[in-house]
Length: 393
Image 1 (cartoon, one colour):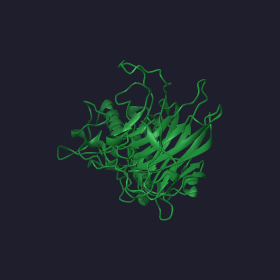
Image 2 (image 1 turned 135 degrees about the vertical axis):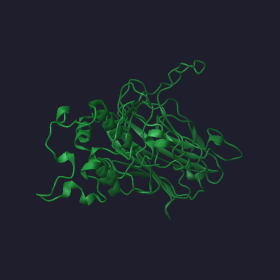
Image 3 (image 1 turned 180 degrees about the vertical axis):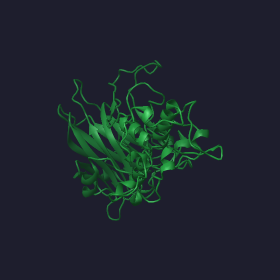
Image 4 (image 1 turned 120 degrees about the vertical axis):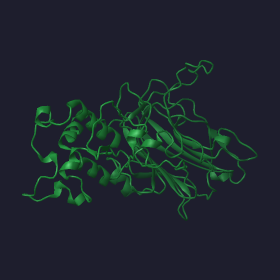
């Protein structure tokens, strides 16, 4: 992931002491001790990891040193500057939204000490827990009321940190137009002493029509939610609703057990002859809606909400085209956990889901539009209310 002139822009790690190799007394961006050893390669297959026995040393990673002792490898620079260079390289240049090739190249091009520091970093592969609220517990006149934690995604590429973004043109990414869209994620709903009420998991609704109806036209958008109507002590029902103009589709999937992780794939399949909602649980198709070909969903400028939302039109195709419908009304923000949220502009087959449901994927496909791994570290630090999009968008 390119970070041109990152020292002149906003970066995640900064220090007053960062001394790198220089060329003709001019600082060279992304220069480290590995550049002097020739470990940088044009092609991944030619890096030192693939060299046969007897090949010369190309990287200081190949030298068996105890990098915890600076006297073994620090001679012409201060230990402080060398540590800061390593931190700068690892934090500001790590290709978190890159391809598998990008990651391989990044690791190979680290110096021996930088690789030592990288291996010493604590790794977080957790999930994101949403605290949730209960109905009527919020006093909306109180600005300090607990409204539950949720995520709001501004659908403009490069919106939050343009200096760190691969794509920063400001274009909408999530609107599928007339294409299919699939939401994949791991879901955990806990057993609670209170009854489970309607809760939004993921929602994107046209802001100008959110929660309203006008002249027979319904709120345009997509909602994936937990339904409280069919909830039991040990399971919940996952529902998906899609509305555009006066048309709407909905489908529900029961059997999502509480206190267990489930892989959910909620798809609006717009392939020829389909035009329907498809719901999968653990890579098995569990529910489909009726078929209906509707117009595009006008919600390009609307935020994507995770664990919170507003009311959404639902109903059956039998009501078409009169526009008669009922509304799904969330009564609390989501209480549960989500992991590995991925949004694709394509239909995900059962074999694709099974192959990738229990491991990370990499960017590189133009069909992957959003990817939250939710592996950000816990604790108090700057920007700890930000999640990283690993799709490259």
